Image (cartoon, rainbow, N blue to C red; front, side, top):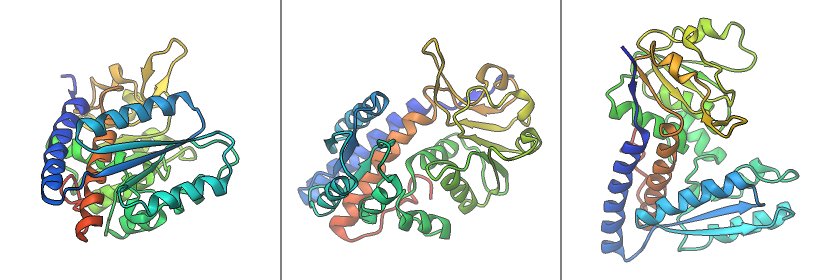
Length: 295
């Protein structure tokens, strides 16, 4: 029997509606509209597409979104100054620095220039450390969206073996920490892992975030496992595919995310959630309830 498809688009739409209701209540009680500032450095075409999608979804949810576009030759100190300016802007509750940034800029240092209380991407070392300690403030949007997907489809995590393929600070590492916080036994694999299939075949939950099309085939998957494909790869003909051979693996897995339409929409949905939480926390002095969508 073919795997059940985890429909990220449908769930993301429900999350957006939830956020819209919360934003309306928040605006009614405080007179404040939660605001997100997106900082784009350079003119990367893919980044511009992603930003348009994020800002469109913010507006649909009733959030205020503003774009700050800096030239590709912007100096490190100029970008940091813009981020510090946004830190002090009371109308901005969340700040997102679009990745990638042009060569010559230190992305990690730029992230550290964002106030942790406005770091809705969850990449600041303070927020990363809190997640690792099990005391999260903001969880990176992609791992949080994956957990929300698992919960929505009643896929158990506690007591199960989860394998994460990929160790980036954006997805792999925070995903492992989040699964561990939810009582999974977690294995992290990466480019130097020998005999990858010997690890992935043990996974009840397999999360793949590498950026290599077709890396995971049916020989890598335990029958009945939940397979979460974070990869987005554009083939020479223009077709988007993930890191998982979808058609072959869906006959082995119990659940699987499509590409596109799986993890991507949930990433944007969790950005809306985090921005709404940041506004509530900054305005009312209460801690963001990352518990509500998966913590």
